[in-house]
Image 1 (cartoon, rainbow, N blue to C red):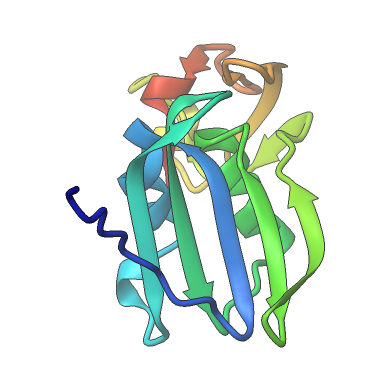
Image 2 (tube, rainbow, N blue to C red):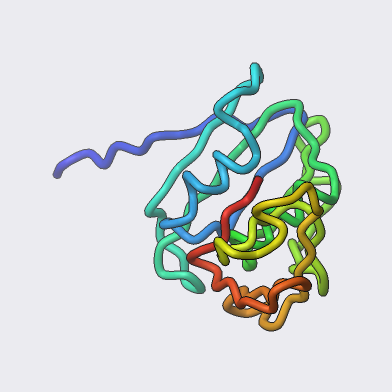
Length: 152
């Protein structure tokens, strides 16, 4: 009988676990949260089985707790993601990321002619769809679909 080998990932003492990230969105989440530039331990797995998503990704970040604006960024890229806050190896809080009704200052408008791409004006968007994230620019009314979202 062949022995089944299993790779175990260490638990984190304090920090955040971001779970239920669509597999194709993992590196975008890493990028928007600047996880490639932090000095703490980061572990990620991708293309893991998920009943809800088919394939999912997960990120474990030691000694990092996210602010609301960072959580909003996650919601735009991975609206089904869940955050588990870990303290002393225990989950002390679960947060479901939620796409807010309005997005201010974190997304670039896709319309090259939009005033926000030519002047120092903070971008503003109304969320027109939270399921498959879709944003309407306050200034030019151009719709930005989830796959085209560019975060500052």
